[in-house]
Length: 101
Image 1 (cartoon, helix red, strand yellow):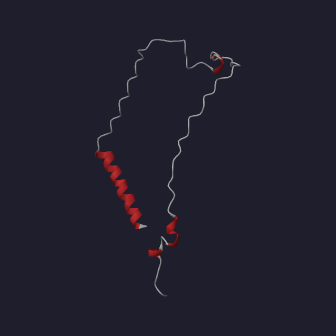
Image 2 (spheres, one colour):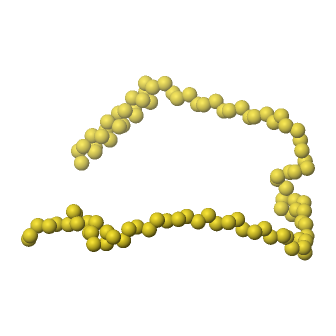
Image 3 (tube, helix red, strand yellow):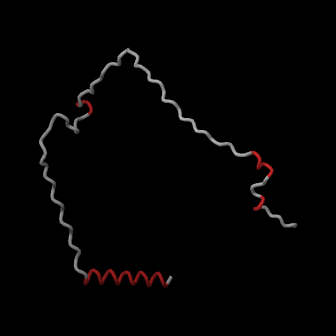
């Protein structure tokens, strides 16, 4: 379509003007490497291979039964019952269409 071709032409002209007259974008300076000031600790090397990691300490279960504590008492809520006297009254009566159609 002519409008699309015109937009492409305008975009091409804008790119040509930018490359001709705009100053080049300066490249950002690389960030300096952070210096490690910690102490060397070889006791816990996180980069060990799985087979090189020391085995975790395992403790055997004791055969003695643990004493069981009684469960805390459950708090009961008292819920008031609704009055059953209003059963005859329709709560949606005012919303119903009462016209004689």
